[in-house]
Length: 273
Image 1 (cartoon, rainbow, N blue to C red):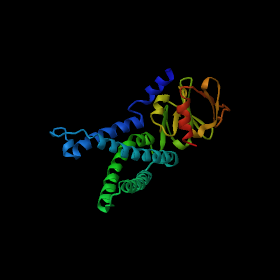
Image 2 (image 1 turned 90 degrees about the horizontal axis):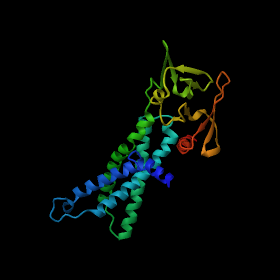
Image 3 (image 1 turned 90 degrees about the vertical axis):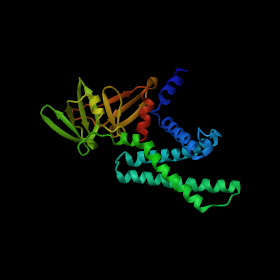
Image 4 (image 1 turned 135 degrees about the vertical axis):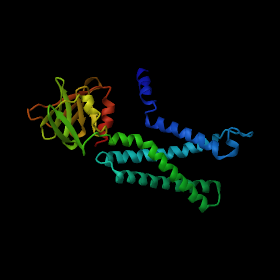
């Protein structure tokens, strides 16, 4: 029972993609259907609540949202994890709209055939044009937060500015394997086995990293997917993670992921495979 309550508290929030966008979709459907027909306007003497219109709008909107979500998930794993620019964003948008066109054409002809109605080219083209326009706006709004999180890097041309004492070092994000804290000092472990002392706290440096590429494993360490050599389940639902490289001082890292972070970690890690 406790695990069910914990799950509901964690997932039934406005930050959840589906909750956030389905609520937004319902509000849009509610407003739009009250304005499109005279009898649906609340001040009209013959006012009728547009149950059917809202339901149909929610169904169509949900189909578009599902198509967009899975295409975004594909792009997130294959393209956005390495580069987010205008070209990849437009490619995501137009490929999503292409899938929506296919779904629209399929549903249109199925429905026309089901009610034995005549095909109307003007109505078809008008409907698909409006659908693509609204979909473009909706997709941009639905994924703006996710794209921002993926792109969030306070950096200098893809570099992390590390200041230690009077010395400033620019470290390429592509050089970072993991970042760890030891004796209240934060180090950047590079893929070549070298380590750099910083004057950051882990919280400071976490705010400068892409959540797509890096994962805060515990209070002492932040991982990049390239640092993971092996993942193994251990007692009490925990994970043991072996990291690479071994540092220049022959120090090897093997960390533990708590059972509370296990699923979040696995979702993140499997998205990199």
